[in-house]
Length: 305
Image 1 (tube, rainbow, N blue to C red):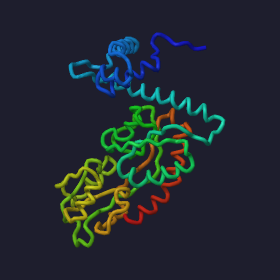
Image 2: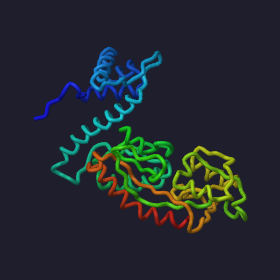
Image 3: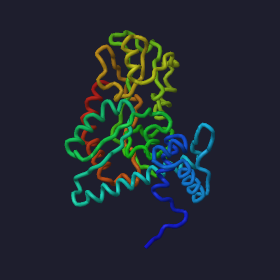
Image 4: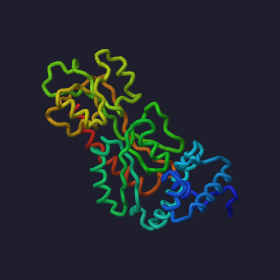
């Protein structure tokens, strides 16, 4: 039988690392864990000694993870989550279809608005033992996939194929390919002449080549916080935008949508999870409901663009 070694970290030590990172200091972590500050400090020093790296920068204002600490904390979250899943999976072994327990989902705004509600409803009906917990995350930088890599989510609805590579240990599968369309105030005679309204999450690497080749697209003169604000500005006649189909679901009649033709850009939307959680009952249940729901969404979205 395998035995623990001096380099192994116990679950409580992992919890301490996560608490310090989440709370920003040893004192705050001690309060969260109902420990003394000296116990937290002792635990962190022990973890650093076993790992062989400094995990936190200490200062008067608290503690923050070093690059090594960020890695350690991300894996600590994932290991602790697997311990929770171990219990849920073992309890449900006698009833394989009875998935239960919390399921942490990260999604970007338009997916949360237009994909998740129907998916969560199906999940609630078919798997009442699953407790979805949703985080809405901006799809910039590491985006929703980064939430999974950092152990903050079990599965993410993410845009795939961008310039940021998938973090190691994650698996991804496509759900739909959504087209981009030209969006403008309904009835405008020359929408391409309008100023451009944009937002930070738009135009990933999968569309940049297309954008660069379009000499009619000006530099954005209005930067909005999200796609909902873009639609509001466009609806009021303040500019045009180039937006993906999910962002246009349910657009008001005051917004006109013009097809960009056969060479229009598209983006892939899919799900990302860890290789360890991909086989868990809760994640598999959500993936089944995503796949069962997306075809209807695609047909509805495709009609507008």
